[in-house]
Each structure stands twice: as structure tokens, then as C-alpha cells.
Amino acid sequence: MHRVELGSTGIEASYLTFGTGSTTRAEGSAQVRLGFDACVELLHYGVEQGIRSIDTADGYKSHSHVAEVVKTFGRDALTLTTKTGAKDAEKAKADIPRFLDELGVEHIDVLLMHYMTERDWPTTRAPVMEVLSGYKEQGLVRAVGVSCHDFGALESAAAEDWVDVVLARINHDGAEMDGTPADITTVLQRAHGAGKAVCGMKIFAEGPLASDYRGAIGFAYDLDCVHTLTIGMESVADVDANVAYINELHGATPPTGATLPRPRPTADGAPA
Image (cartoon, rainbow, N blue to C red; front, top):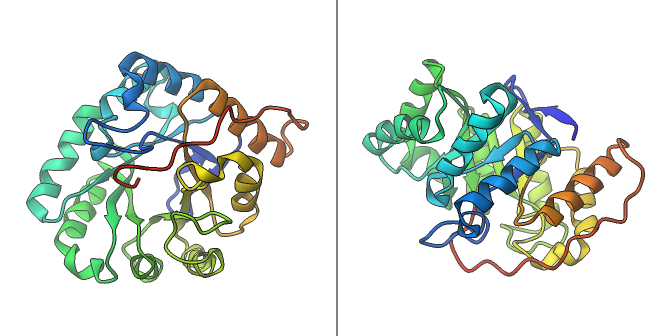
């Protein structure tokens, strides 16, 4: 799996990120619902196949699972993204030390404010942004940003100097997205042009597009404004198919016959 630089952050990551937040419910994500040992084993397998970036979040309840992967492979082998749902400074101040403890690390590579749904988030979340900037200055967080679930919020992310990393919904169909593929791509191009790292999610629209996973991945891969793809995987077959096709696209391996075993189910919980 090839590696990329995340915009102007100085952080290097694998092009494919292992998402641990598929169809999140109160009891945790689909990956967590596999069971602790099964989830950790699957993450281990992904890392062994070259997926050295892992996306987690407080709400996914997968920090402890990721911590086991860190123990096995070492901190320097992994690029870790997590997210806080904090809406005020006090919650943010408490979240980051807890995240570091739960993940068993001394720093977090990318820390995102989770699930931005309003255009004015740079104003309403300014106290949280200040706290995260302070942790960044201390070296406890290397880059900051947002995950977006609204077109206006995404436009604000592209224009906001504070943002280092944008996690955005993008696929060729427009399903589970915040606008048309053309409109979203235009905003992502602005973010990319401003030196921000653009990470694509909902590549399979939480399931419906997995039946044409090559088309879905190929569309995102061909975009010149997306640095990495975050895909939630729930089986070894998922990992094998995604890794094989991305390696094929990148010219690292010859064409493969690997396929995803089934379409993913439609999301029934909180978005990633």
C-alpha cells in the first residue's frame, strides 16, 4: 500500500485508512460489534497488508481496540486519527488526555472535531478550536480539522485557516453525501489548493455502492483533490479486495480477481 503526505501537515499516511466507525450504534461501530478479539485481529491483518493508517473516534468505542494494534506494531508504524464530539472548551480539555490514555500513545496524529453540520461551526466551536490548537502547540496533537456532514460546513472547512485536515463524504453516486459529486469535488479542490489534507469517506455510501466497489474506489482514486480514502472494513475479504484493487490502480500489482463478499448494509446509526 503506497503512502502519501497529508497536505501541508508533514504527516505521512497510507493511502487507504482503516475506518473503525461503520454503522455506529450506542454499543459501538460495526467493527467493535465483531467482538474485541475479532476486531483487533482484523485490524492487525489490515496493518500487515500495508494499511498503516487507522481512523477512530470517541463515539465509535474503538480506542481500546486500536491501542492493541499500537502495542503490537509500535507507535511509529501507524498514523492515527480520532475525533472529539466536544462542543465546549472544558469537554475538549478533558477529551484529549483521555484519548491519549485510551489509545496508549503520547501523541495523536490527526484530531478532528466530529460531525460538523452547520456552516457557522468556526464561530460556535471556536472555544474547542482554541483548546485543540493549544494541544497542537504542545505536540500532543500534530494536526487538527473537522469531519463534515453538511455542504455549508464543508465550505467553511475549505476556507478556514485553522483546518489542517478535512474528512469529507465523496463518491460517484452522491449517496450519503452533502451535495452532488461535482459540487463536493469543487469544494474539495479549494481545500486541497489551500494546502489542507482531504480525506474521503463514504466511498461505498455505507454499503449500497459496494456492489461496484471497483467503480467506487476508482472514482475517488482519480480525483486530484483527495489524499486518502477511509473505508470501514468488516472482514479479511474486505481488506483483501480493497488493498488489491488500490495496489492495482497504483501500479504496484497486476490486476486481481479479488471481490468484496457482499454489499454493505445501509447505515442505521450515527454517521462516521
